[in-house]
Amino acid sequence: MSAAAPLLAVEELRTHFLTRAGVVKAVDGVSLAVNRGEVLGLVGESGCGKTVTGFSIMGLVDPPGKIVGGHIRFEGVDLARLPEERLRALRGERIAMIFQDPLMTLNPVLRIETQMTEAIRAHHPEVTQTQARARARDGLAQLGIPDAEARLAAYPHQFSGGMRQRVAIAIALLNRPALLIADEPTTALDVTIQAQILHEVQKLCRESGTALIWITHDLAVVGGLADAVAVMYAGRIVEQGPVDDVLDRPRHPYTLGLLGSVPSRTRRGEKLPQIPGMAPSPLHLPEGCSFRTRCPRADSRCADMPELAALAPGHLARCVHPLGEARP
Image (tube, rainbow, N blue to C red; front, side, top):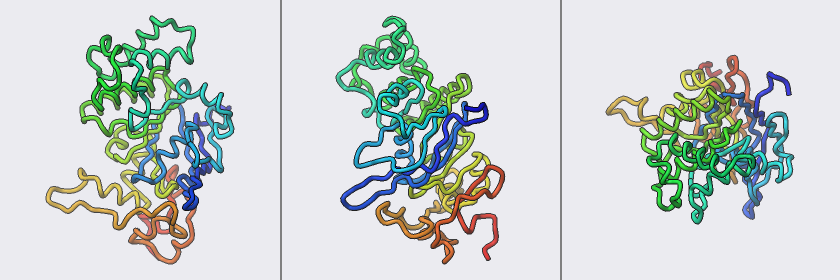
């Protein structure tokens, strides 16, 4: 792999769910890249395909879901074509994921110490139990868990929901992965703890060169954390580019709608703007641009699916009537 190649390059990824009701195209032609030490924000409404994209990269899509096309190249290796044994060796070591629900991560019948030390020694058998325990204790303390030494002996049910999430994040960070995928990990946490975790994640990326994909609907977090942003809608990326360019000069109407819905951007007393209508069912997507049924700029040209085209250096949008250009 050349020095200029990204750590992760996803190319035309398609993950479909083959249900009795029909084919759900949860991810339909997604391409993105993340460099070492870079933070990519993946944003969009619930159900747009963000989490399925993360699960696809991790190789965690279960039936009836299936990766039906595309490539997921990590350090030059196509993860979409790796056998499960090799994927398991990478997960938790080179690639880690923080899930939105910590109960997906933590085993309710094992002590925190057991879960953390096993996560270390499964990939580093040369590390002694004593060394692994010390690393686990330091990992909890780093995430702001008080009396970390004693809490190692606790079970998950003895923690609050926010504390469980911090434990799950600590486990994901234990082996200093090259790629970290975070699926809305701070949703259940208060703002002070959220700020602390964001600081630790930024520090990890800066010091160890870890690449981060931060999946969220919170554009305020993305603005302060990410280097680049990709906006998803109905299984496709509709806009992507440097975070300042996309948030300050959005070119896709959907991105503008998301930004307009952020309370901090609305003056006191003003009505909070909303994107009209509802996101379409992935079983019954409209022909052409999936956003056209909700878009004020839509016309007959939107009946054909537009390509993701460059409108400025590094700034792409999937729209035949991008913002900043006059309508014909």
